[in-house]
Amino acid sequence: MRGSHSQTSGLTPHMIRYGYELGRFPMTMEDGRVEWIQPYHRCLFPSDGIRVSKSLRRRLARQDYTVTFDTAFESVMRHCLRPQDNWISEDFIRVYTEIHQAGWGHSCEVWRGEALVGGVYGVALGACFCAESMFHRETDGSKIALYHMVQKCRDLHFIVFDAQLMNPHLASLGAYEVAHSTYMYLLKECLQRGNAWDACKTPPLDR
Image: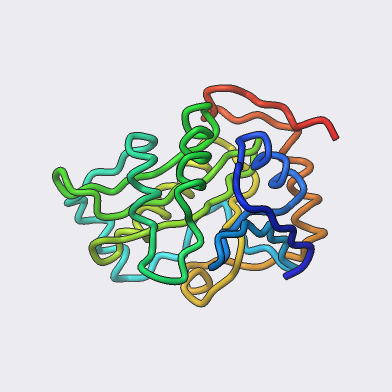
């Protein structure tokens, strides 16, 4: 990784958007500092969807669950908290919830009855969706949420579905990497476009 910059707290929606438009994203370090991460390579998902295994295909076909969007954004964030190696802080939950309330933070929820069993959340910047984190409380819950989130973005004509940093799990679902320069080229194009999901069409910030 490269180009990181630290700060202690006080994140704002404007600051988050500015960082994303520079090709960076924030993470909380163990000592509570916020680092702005700019990877050498960016992890993306193809617009035609994630790779669906036979077992996941069977799970999707069963439809013994309900999928919603933007109905439990903060709950999805809190379910993404980990016992250790956690980069989501209360300050993150506050500012991303404000972003959701402003209309450009979105979530996908997977329910079994009244129980939230999977989800993913992120932010929309023009025609780019930046997925932040996902969770599961039942087998395949996060995969189902990611599947439906990618489908939603495709249906709304997003150009880029950004998953930030590659790992073996994302690779198994069909994610691929592009160089930072390629990502910035794609992002610039995305920022010139609106999308049908945002409640408010926020233009790129002035430099």
